[in-house]
Structures are given as structure tokens and as C-alpha cells.
Length: 427
Image (tube, rainbow, N blue to C red):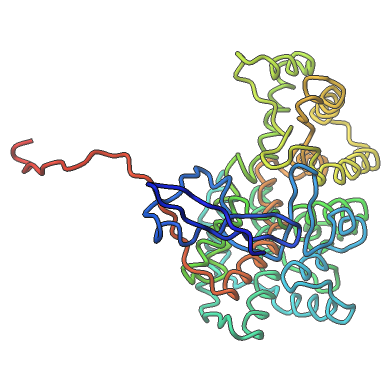
């Protein structure tokens, strides 16, 4: 594309090239803006700024589209296993049967976690939030795997990827079992990736583990739907930390901390906390829908609408079916879930919400499923991190392979100027 845009400033005209993506997204290339004009842009939250060119994920919020490496999220959620999607995101293509089996086998071989990591987890009180423990444990992997990764070596990169894909589910399961007061357990190499996650989390020491197809299908879809989501807060964090040439484990630990916030990965936890508050108030969904529409009421309806999607969240369409299946098949009788279904039906039929496209999003439905599966509310964001892991890896790998420069945003200074220093004795 040879089209350009012009900027007229101080009686001078400057030209900047346009860059077009494969899905026809168009951006202005301003990397020479400051050098040419002395100006910088001001874009709080970077809502209008592209930080990179990426081949991993495409998101169209206006049309409600999400694609991984060109594949629609609908096709992947319906037909693929989570480990296939992880391979696709990280390496660029869906695996052959032989490639998938090797990937699974290599992950199993690396699934043992150093026993000393248990000491780190033990140092956390049982009341600690699992995300704090998970970030610390992930960062600690660097100490137990001190060799630096040669990003020019495909073998080094592959081994680092396999290591984190193998050990991260164990760490997630351990944080869950710490919350539940259960003994820590290990991976089972006879199980598939998702089924293995389920057994590590749910197996009780006094019982044999029995696979549950309903649970596994729901977990598989949830993990796929959360696997990547373009340049969101945690992914951007992973890339910008990695741009300093920090290692993969350290970069992912930073992403976990970013994901922890209630405006990002903590949103599904906020949904359940809202539902519990409604239940304590008597469970009147109509009352709270009216509060949500009242501009003077501070109440916020969590789990509806999305910062990027201006239409129905495509992930929510998919996971709603799983939510219905889990609730129906497991025969869950829970007033919290009844309130959730009541809010959903009212929002889908209320002109106020329909006109504003405030539909239930993926956080709304994922929280319902996790609740039905018996996962504690504070563990929801850990489950989000477990799904997002391959996306973080893919984005980190792409950033390092492209040798992107260290992230260094500019600012507009608004503080005081030219102040005269006064000795402490005279202040």
C-alpha cells in the first residue's frame, strides 16, 4: 500500500505511510513522527494505537469476530482440542496427528515440578489469593530453570515452550488445592491435557479419579475461548516485559499479575460476587436490572457488554451452550445460578440492553460454569490464566522472533517546572 496521510503543523506538511493488515485493518505508521515534527501522540490507554504487527489473532469488535491464525473461534471451539489450539497459536499451523502426539508426549515428560516449589506455596497463607501465589510460582520457575533461551534456536524455544506448558497446569492445580485444603498432586501421563488438568484439580486422595466428559468438554471450550485475545492488557504486558529480553517465565508471570485486575481477568470473579450480593438482597433480578438502568445508581451490572465488542461477544454465544449443558447434565440446584439465568433472560429481552448491545459476555457465562463445577470464585482468574497461556507464549515468541524494540511509551509532562531547591534546614 502506497497511500499516505498528511499532517499540517506549523506551516509545514508531513507525510506518513499507511499500513494495511490482511483483514483490511488500516493504520498510520508514525514511528518517525517525533523525529520529523518534534510531536508525540497522546492516547491514554492506547485505545487508538497499534503497538505491533501480529499474525496471531484477529478481532473485529464491530462485527463480533474472533480468529486464531485465520481460523474462526466457532470452528475451533466446536472441532478442536485445546492442545491443538495451543499448538496452532504458538507455532502457526494446526498440528498433524504425529506432531500433536509428540507435543503431548514432550509435555508429559516435563510435567514434574521441583519439590522446593511446594515450600514457596506453603509460605502463602491459605487465605492468600491464588493469583498472587501463581504469579510467584511462575516467576520462581526461572530459578529452577536458569538456562537462558536462545531465541534463534528452534530447539531451545521448543523446550522452553514445552516446559511452561507442562508445569503451569500443575502450578494452577496446586493453587486450587491449597484453597480447598487438599494435598498437592501430580500430572498423570495417561490422560489428555484437559482431562489431566481436571484430575489434578478435582481428584480426592480417598477416591479413584473418574473422567467426566461433560466437565472435560466445558473446560476444553473455556480454555480455547480464553487462549488469546489480541493486544489486551496482560498480553501487552507480556510483550513489553519480554521486549527488555526478560525470559519467557518472567514475562508470563508479569502477564498473570496484569490479568489479576477486576477490569481484565478478574471480571468473571466480579460477576459471581455481584450474583452473590443480589442473592443476599433477596434475589430480585428486576430490582437490580432497574438499578443498572438508573444513571444515578452506582450499581454496575457485571458481565454484560465488552470494551472491544460492540456486538455480541462471539465467545459468549459458544460458551452459553456449554453453560446450559453443564447446568442441565449435572443437575445443579443453586440459587446463584438461578439468578444468573434470570438476569440473562431479562437482559436479552429488555429494549434498554438490546438497543445498547449490552449482551452477556464470556465472563458472565464462564463464571456460571466454574461455579457449577465447584471451582471457588477466587480461582476463576487462575482458570483464565490457564487458558491464556498459549496466547502469551505465542505473542512473546513472535515479539522476540521479530526482534521488536524495547517498549518505551512517551508522555506529556504536566508537572511543575523550574523549582528552586531549598536545603532541608530552611523548609
